[in-house]
Length: 378
Image 1: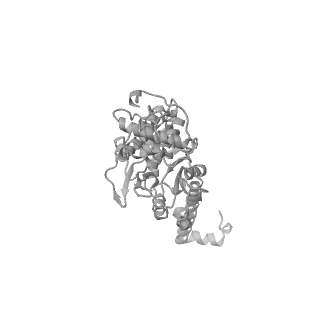
Image 2: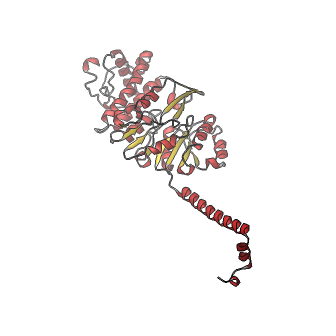
Image 3: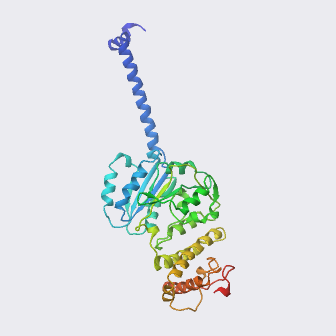
């Protein structure tokens, strides 16, 4: 190439080593910047992997802690979203959410207000809005450890429902006695058939479910409590799925035990008896040949709640029952409860409560007898 074809600026660059180095560095930085921008664009356009649904009812005091724990996840921010559904009066949550969504670390946070109250209703809204391939639920008074989402996604596989550990807290103090955590720990590193561990179906937390599977079922919005049991029993039982239990640390779901927690209510006739019988009726409606074993176990647990409460408060059963006589609806077959063995006083109290429930709800039908509760035990 002849010198006359070179511009004066280029000639100076070639003749000046320092200027040449600076120009090379400028070109390299420009290329690196373009590559970084292209990479960021790919990440931004990547499909959302996980939708975290957070139903919030009067949770202004705890919601920030929940969202902060989700904002510092080890997973790349663009690969998951947080969907908050407000399903009660505004106690400051709107102001909090408006402030957080202005901050870059909460760029994946969305929130909506439900038209009416109810945790099941809020979760159904969250499911309808979810954009992720998988979904998990976090209560607005709980939090998660930094590797919670990453660990769940790492265990994803055909027919696998990944599980995270659970830690219970009373205030800031870890509760050492935690039967649920012990059960999960005992299965660490294992893939276990869902139907063999029906206790895992009794709560919303710490499971990662494919969105296509999650949307096949809706939460029962007519249940005051126990809608989580019915939802996961319907969605996961009898489908040849497996729970995979974790072996890693720093990936737990933190449950904070408070008086206000919906799933941790204090004992009452309404909660321990009437709500449990509502749950039994709902479980009976979805029970079939494939999921019968798991659902019978869940029904037995629901009856157990009622029996224990009635034994502690025996005077409430006759008052609720309003007398005996008549026949039990098929949905309350005590064959499924397995509570008859050696517990005749408890069963008598439960029968009175069921008769009262039937009278108040207007249920109809006849009882079927089974191997766990013979006629001599009625």
